[in-house]
Length: 172
Image (tube, rainbow, N blue to C red; front, side, top):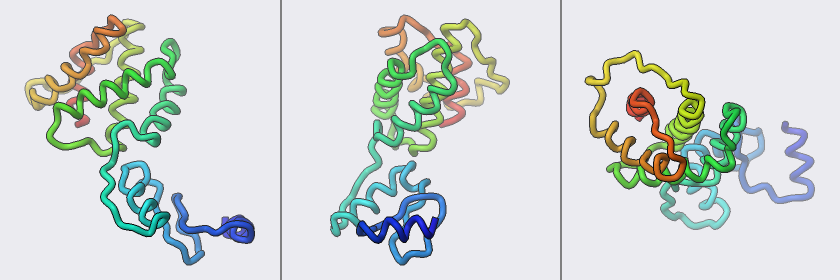
């Protein structure tokens, strides 16, 4: 990696590195996890523009969409990930509108991928079975998820099984 960075530095000005391993070069380093969770975007903008600004992690960010799309490509057999992803992003927006605080991007990705897989399980009529006690879950979370998921009924004529909401409520 160090040799490759030196090659790149010969023809370009490297202002920062993003990845899983900090290079030996004396440049700012942003861990990949920071980019995924949204905090890295502010750091990168500060490095590039030279000014400090407040960047709130955006729902629907390209990183979230790309990671969800990549995961859904691997997991879905019957549903088209490219067609399901916009609905999942709308689900995300509806869910966020009903919450006091935003979800962290890693959790958002996990939730959206689970939801995409839940839609496929619904199509295949093979729902998951929740092994916990639904009465112990935060009822508001379950209701927020159900309200956000109404769009699946509206647009796909699919209704998720109650157990799917329990799994998602446990996640958030």
